[in-house]
Image (cartoon, rainbow, N blue to C red; front, side):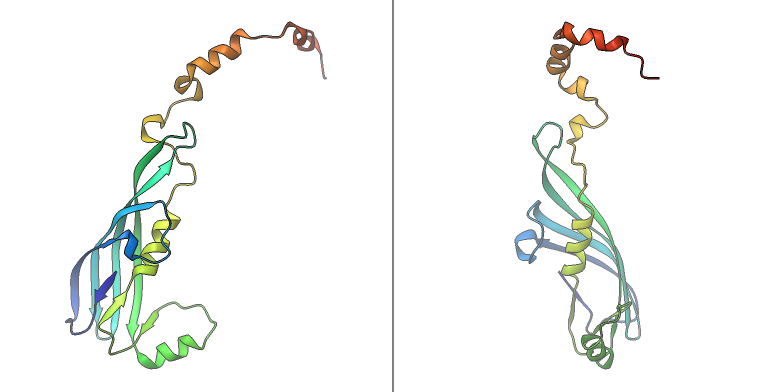
Length: 166
C-alpha cells in the first residue's frame, strides 16, 4: 500500500487505497479479501502526516462454538514522516526510538503496508466470539448439555453438602 508523496502540494489530501491481502507480505493468515485504507494526508513543506482507518475482513473461529465466521477488523492509522535524506541515513545507523519516519527526498511513494498490517494484527480480538453468540450464556447456547448435568446427580456427594468448614 503506497501513498504517492512526490510532487504533491502542501495541504490536506484525501487518500483512498485498496490492496489484496495476498499482496501484503507477512500479514496474518486470518485476513481475507482486500485491505481498504481511507484517510487524509497532510503535507507541510517536507513533513507528512497521515490519519486514517484501515479495514479488512478476517476469517475467525468462534471460541464458544468452534464455528468459522467472518468479522471486519478496523484499525486507526496515524503516521508522521519526513522527506529528509540526511535523517534517513541517521535513522538507519541509530538504535534510538524513531518518532518520525524519514524517507528519501526523491521517493515517489511512501509504503504504508507494514504500519497497516501491524495495526490490523493488533486489533484482532483476543476473545473470538461469533456475532450470533455475543451476549448469550453457555446455557442458552447449549441447553442440551446444561440440562443433562442437572439431571445426573451422584447421591454419594450429597453428604459433602453438610460439611461446615468454619
